[in-house]
Amino acid sequence: MFYRKQAAMAGIFIAATLFLTLGLAFAETAEEAVDKGIKYYKQKQFEEAINEFNKAIEINPNLAEAYNNRGFAYIYQGNFSQPISD
Figure (cartoon, helix red, strand yellow):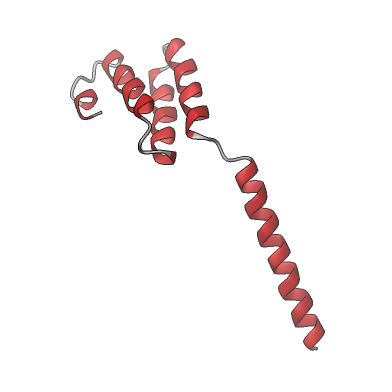
C-alpha cells in the first residue's frame, strides 16, 4: 500500500516536471512577440500587431520597443490618445 502511494507521488512529480519543461520550451519571448508584431504592422494588420505588442509587454513590461511600436500601430488605426500613454 505504501509503495503505491510513493509510485503515485513520483508519477505526479514527473508529470508536473514534464509539463513545466514543455511549457517553457514553447513559451514565446517578448522579443519574438515584438518581431511578430512588426510583421503584422508591415502588413497593415494593426489589430494583430497590437495584440503581439501587448503579449510582449505582458512578458516584459520594461521593453520600450513594444510600447513604441504599439503606439505607432494605434496611430495608424486613428487612435491618438492611447499612444500618449505608451
